[in-house]
Image (cartoon, rainbow, N blue to C red; front, side, top):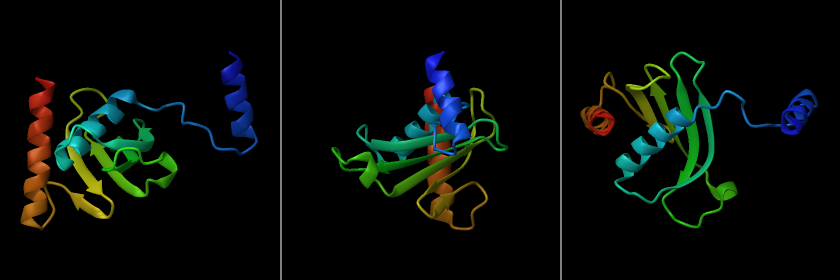
Length: 126
């Protein structure tokens, strides 16, 4: 109860607070996409924001491929958009910094990487 009161108080003062509607499931799925994309089990994750209430639902996060990097020093971003907030989420697009991957992108290699990530996610959900 005290934490809720403090969070509301900070929000009213205009100070940043963690989003109340964060979605751990969406975040975990996006982290899985990022790890698969970089082909690593070790990916340092910094700040994570999820938006299950948006259309399409999505996640943004900072990351580093170097272990031990402080969250404040992470400037690279990874974003995921999904068909729905509930499982299976169905990946519809993801971006690594300013490069985006989707089934409709003109670049054949980016389209292929997208299909690979979608395939790996569908295997993991079975």
